[in-house]
Amino acid sequence: MTLEIWRPQREAGVLISVIIPLANGEAEPGELLAAMPDDVEIILARGGTRATSMNHAAAIAAGAYLWFVHADSGLEPAAIRALIGKLPNDRAILYFDLRFDGGLLMRLTELGVLIRSRLMRLPFGDQALCLSRHNFRALGQYDESAIHGEDHLLVRKARRKGLAVEPVGARILTSARKYRRNGWFRTTWLHLRLTVRQAMQPLG
Image 1 (tube, rainbow, N blue to C red):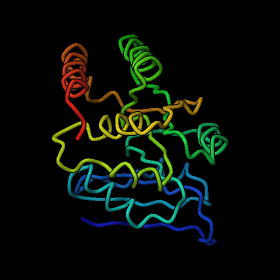
Image 2 (spheres, rainbow, N blue to C red; image 1 turned 45 degrees about the vertical axis):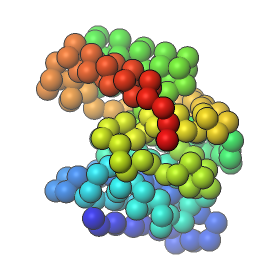
Image 3 (cartoon, rainbow, N blue to C red; image 1 turned 180 degrees about the vertical axis):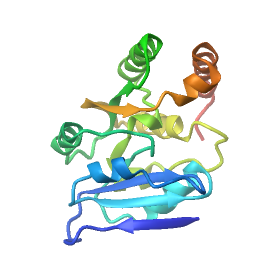
């Protein structure tokens, strides 16, 4: 596992550490990196499982808040400003609404994501979760033993600890390539089945 770190020139009092997990051989997300402001720390965590790579990055992060962003995400300046406007906030785990590239079926997926996030208070990792470094460590970090859904487990633990699950009030763009590759109905059904199964399991 390797970590690539970009720290702002003024390291004292870094507010946000952006943690981006990458698979081995995956290219750096140039557009995503270019969208980041100059005063954040950026850590690319490559190799290992998603949970282990994000935990390793979080362990050395300098920021008071950890912002976990998937490499295939797209951000506009307004979205970043919306997040910064929500901080400091030590009593919540924050998330973005999703905007998928794609057609009508992906608009239905976006509606489902909105309902799941707002009503069930269960945002997923591709919604760019952000929480304080203190709370992340207090929650026990991402569960490295989970076969899948380490993000769901973290949100559930946050709720159990009394943290609010709050929308940033902005959207993050994400790729629909998995839906195109595997089919919309099949992918949607798989996500629903796995989410329900994990939601019914007791937390450790």
